[in-house]
Image (cartoon, rainbow, N blue to C red; front, top):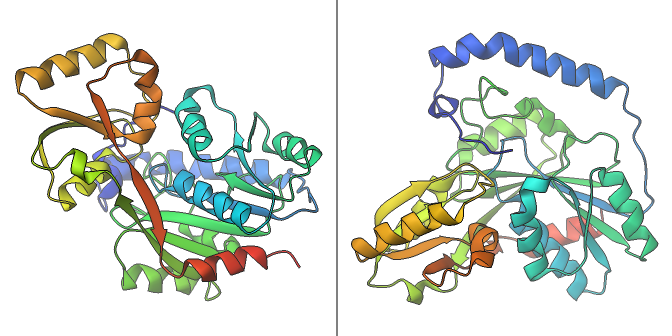
Length: 310
């Protein structure tokens, strides 16, 4: 989905949100009606879902990769399962840069079956909290502290795929960013059994951009989060350009940005996901910020994963 998030999604009681509310209610009713007829399937091996309720930009894929790699290190044979969307090749490439066992299919259940046929003994779903056809043994829901739940309304009135009350079906919350005690209290009121963890992105190639004037561009769920990450490390951005999530760049668009950056003597930087989308074009002027994900109480999270199906 190529999506530019409207600003009113983060504003309470905005007139546009209120006007769209009837459509949101109808949309949620249709989803509940459809879910009523879905039969849940148990796959016998642990199924770990890394999902969200806020639409895009919550850090699901980096967390999925981290979990899968850790499971591999401790002797498990994990696979990452992802529903195939043609416009998400960037995420497929990003995963394959860091993890070998990625299974894709238009139906996640078929991808799980393919993984089991290759003796995979634990599956990590990158997205799929809303897919009720698969029994999950652990649901991990991701948020970003800069957006959290936006205005708290569901699509199209707001950015939520489903109501926040759906967190009663989750066991773990991972918030990327700063600690937020008010948000913690709100979600614990939904379910006192939720375990809350925090994560952060740590840039690993900052020295490539020190003392540089930057041209930063991004086509991810929340481009401003990328810009904020750069600025939080005292990097100077002279030009910011945002594109929709999973944006399909043309060579001419890249050439135009390179020309503008050159004229202003700016160094170009983008996200690793965006870089994977355009690196086949061969432009040497494009650089990306490489990051690693750190999680507080990581060992506790891994133990929850290991003990979720006993």
